[in-house]
Image 1 (cartoon, rainbow, N blue to C red):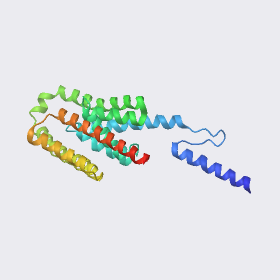
Image 2: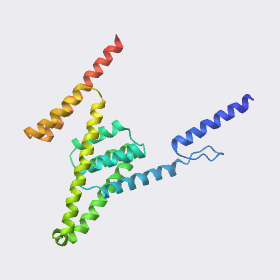
Image 3: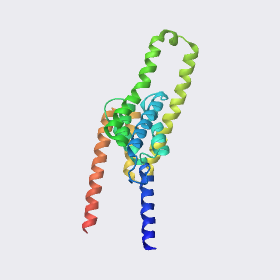
Length: 226
């Protein structure tokens, strides 16, 4: 009876491992078909980023909520707070924010290979679309239907950007700390009313964040020692 019980426990453990890695145990060698799962993951990563980039109009910020919905809410590959951090890094880094965010997400999910795939998947759709549009630019420029469609897209982009602002502000408020809220309001006032350079604001906010983390670490060490 004890031997049977041990065998049942071992089988259950193997099943749990198989579920976690997403592979299948062959029942004989105990090996997991991880290679196929990794290939499928890379393919899903590339296709997801390609679709997001192809449907993104109005700038890099529009792709952020789409990435968040795909990789955080649907696929559960990235945590909510981590996605927020990746967005901040992508914004503060030089270059297009959509490409920066895709590189960070790809590297987080699939390492260097994932980063390369996401870069290609992000660049290909606009490259193809712009190439086609450039061939018929004069026709599109004077077309009333195209102009009305672009005006409608602007309204949609504004709504998506507003959704990004609300969600990111909600995440900051959820921390229940005064400093992030003060930095948020101060940055908005500096940009909106005093026309302060975004680069300067990002550097100052980064410095404040680094000092805040350092002070909290020192306090945590002091509490542990006491």
